[in-house]
Image (tube, rainbow, N blue to C red):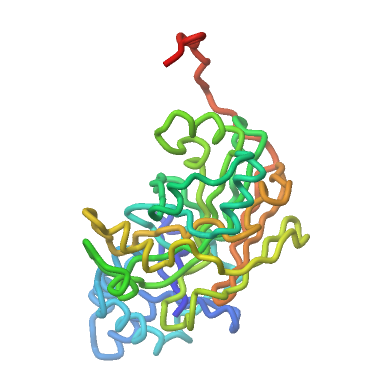
Length: 338
């Protein structure tokens, strides 16, 4: 099943609804509406039917996933009334496919690691990358869905994209082994870890991980594909297009650490939560820094992943100016030696 989130205008403002996407049929199914219709056919009062449906199939995909098997059972039951709750796929306004409690982003593909360090760091990759699955935590406040416009931040001259797989957690788990971890994976989506490369170069030596170089936007979508539709993650093909021009073709291969190992490592002395998203790290040649191309105002970036679909993000035509930016302080350690 392909599950996504759309925005619906109501007298009380925007409401988020969960849908099952049927791209091959050119439509989506409003699952709560469909489920309410199935209940009404069983003599439920319309108001109670709607209330129950929104409880079982809420606009929050994370909350829905937390409902376990009952959530997917309700979603499948809702599709029995799909014809009465369908919307043209061209008429919907998408939001981030999953509203994750925590966003983590990994680094697991050898080709990207080698490319990045050769081009940017001009040095061999750190030995630490091969000692454990690295990842950072990002904001959950700036997630964009399919076709949502990214405001171009004026603090960067090197706006980049990153084509990644988003692993969506299906159930809680702590101290998992790689053998146990796949059972905790609900599905996958496309995760675009937008990056301000020039800002990243200043932030990383601070030793606190990325900040403004990452936390201005993440693209998640267009929908989450449940694992029963994915035969194997390894070998999936990807493609990057800007303004319709194909910039790179890539494939899921050369794992330093597998998806199961990454999920298991995250869970050690921590807890995976339903709806958490963990980025795989960038696929080889899946970022602009690897091919010498950054995004400009007015560009449209499309990331395609086999078995999932295409996540499209238009970039604003004008830059978004920050109201304030910190001034560098005097460096007090000139000439200091250890």
